Image (cartoon, rainbow, N blue to C red; front, side, top):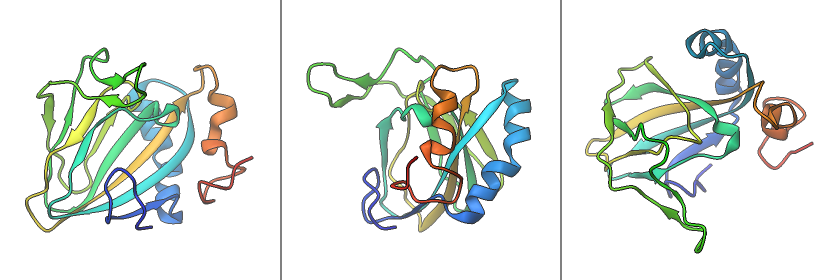
Length: 167
């Protein structure tokens, strides 16, 4: 719970049962908004604290279609780079090479969701200047995408299981 590699020393939870319920309950909304048939993969909640930063990154395959929902706390912008060709893993070093882009700033109120292609679009958050901000990330795959069928539930037998419990 306190071992998040992206934002160290910050509370996070992979597949919290309440958040996994949101993942399923919001599936029809996600399918409507994206005009795609989707497989649910996993949920991830994080409560950011003052001073936290979410560095520029692109997510893994399980996050092909993603949403971030503001659960509460202060309104903290997320930035997205709409040009999918910017940012990515350097083939020589294997390290992520962030773009120089200023991105598009998106402000979410509690209960608002932003839907985006997490594995294609670079996204980040600058340093948090106030006390806290709660977010949940819900991740899906397009059922038409190669590998989606095998990846359902993030390769777990069913939702609600920890990340290490794979098929």
